[in-house]
Image 1 (spheres, rainbow, N blue to C red):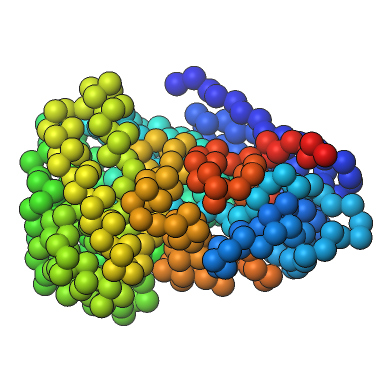
Image 2 (spheres, rainbow, N blue to C red):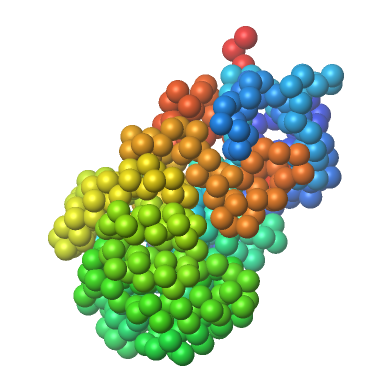
Length: 455
Ligand SMILES: [Zn+2]
């Protein structure tokens, strides 16, 4: 495999403080070795002047503000220009909190759906390189925190997460579900005709179970191995062989057994559901959120609201799959199932917004390319959210659900300095979030494509 070298040295702006903010790094993807020299930054103070501020909590933009960060933490947010020169002058930009995507899979790319045999051919080194590449892409699109909603290769993901957390690789902070908890041959089982049975990677099979007792065991093991939450595949999936999105796969008592373990260990459970029956089963079993939720009836949306069950609905990727999927050569059955669930899901989304459900921004990255994380905002706005509601679903609302409210998801004094910036006003043009100009994670400048103000 060829070695790809990237280097990213952020723009050095006009004073000494900001040069410290620049992060020099070199990544060798093939060997997955990364050097990050960011220690100096974390001890220094930097001021960022923002022409407008969306703090992730307020319902209105807050006008121009100066954010001061030190040791990776926001130490002040002031309406006044600082007395000394600012480190980053973003007078033409809106600053927002680092975004949160609550549904990603770094060990998968969209084009894999045209040939699932690739999962048997990739080595662990290949998978690690893929995960690190997708993590790097994701954070550079402004998503500084993700919920990794199930992995085919949970052990390799854990290695990647440790590298990122240790400062040896670039990526978002990751809450990981570990392996998919799924029935044999279910939506989370890597049984594809392209993969001979004896070639199915055993790493992918850690969450397969058939009874409540077995599921409880798998859940305990996943948490022991570092899962931050659990993901159950309650119904069939769009991108799988021999399963149907509308058909339940796990029983309510299977999910109850998992929820009981999760509660004891203080972690949350999310359920992949397309079918209404699975949605009901999962809510009644006590899960904290539903993924997709494509085919829920009105009563089940109401049940979710009543039980404070959040919905992470990937309402954009159907458009991508319908176009790119055909070009990439996805099997016709995937294209058809995607068609069957796309508009139906968007209608459910509209109803969920109207019903006041808690909606978490989640794109199902892996189905959607990892550099398209910001493309879903537009669909959410088209389907009933205000632009600010959509932004909050990817900031404070997601952070609260992930129990990270006191760490990220807002521009607030005391929180980690996860800051992004886009030119102009994202409330007037929500598509500006497709391509962010600045990304700072925990005080480290990951990307700076801002230009000095024109005035
Ligand atoms: Zn998914």
